[in-house]
Image 1: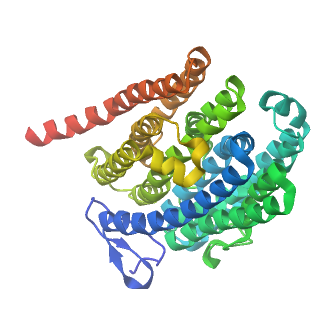
Image 2: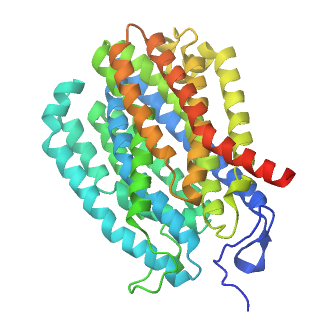
Image 3: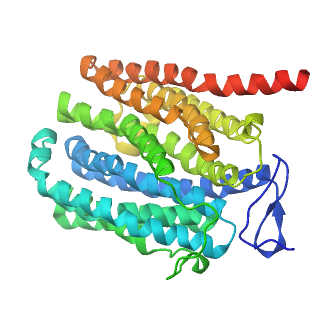
Length: 437
């Protein structure tokens, strides 16, 4: 009996995946093709993000640029909820066979996503003055304006998870491009119109709202009635996702807020610029490689994850992308910083390359953690959460210079990579010994 067009099944690393229109691709081909689509999308996104940051940095200067990046960091901290909904939606859309089952997953998660998203936005709006006291922005309204975008953030995550779980990578990539373009176009318009930091932050909120509406998820994933689901979303999966993304957003973003608190405005702005460049590496690895790997391995119900066949290629891709990025940052730091942000941001010594090293180490850990999460409940997510707390404490204790802060990141990320690798290497060794026997 023929399988539904949306069904994705395979029993080994090289078995074909059924695609709409009768096409079939192996998981390896799906990862390569999907990664290509997402990497191209991320290149376009990064072009718009760079253009946005260039205008903000050059027109408003380091101090105001630091304020804008503080707002971006708050949004990224809030993204733990959005990303958790996206991951859970991806996993269970991929695992359900029928289109009606997939659509039911989306409907259930969308109804739940509005609750934490609106609650977080309301809390941020009500607490804008104490938050502003800690971050020292030019106006507390910067926080209130940001809350408008955060109100839509978790539902955006569900929609992206629906696209990702259905392997609709062109549509998913287009969604990220629309968000980045809106932020750039609206931001430049408002800043040049004289609205300064508030205009730049307003563009951030506008971009999230635009991403909610455009493009719509595929018609087959929209339904008004619930149908039978082979695997409905579970609380355990949701908890795992939340734990993972809380740790992720803290590791990727908390240093920005701590630097904003401990250092003068100009130094904080320079560090924010370095972090902006460094985040490009993580975003390329996460959106371009891990996001593609996740639905492919999650759909492999009959695949023995202990063989580790689904993680080798993503690891090699992340290692290659990280190596190229670190090499470029090490050879041309002044050129990169000066070209993107201007002469005021050039004096960074080796900070850009060092930040990229820490990001590359973390990206390798994320590949292993995400692979485990796609197959089962993974305890490594809790390990990452512990290290995120350790990072906060370490930066609080050791922040005599920007160099010291970055070295703290490198040391902790290297230790975490070793610890995350141990369970994976143990299972891989066991399989090798079983085959030898």
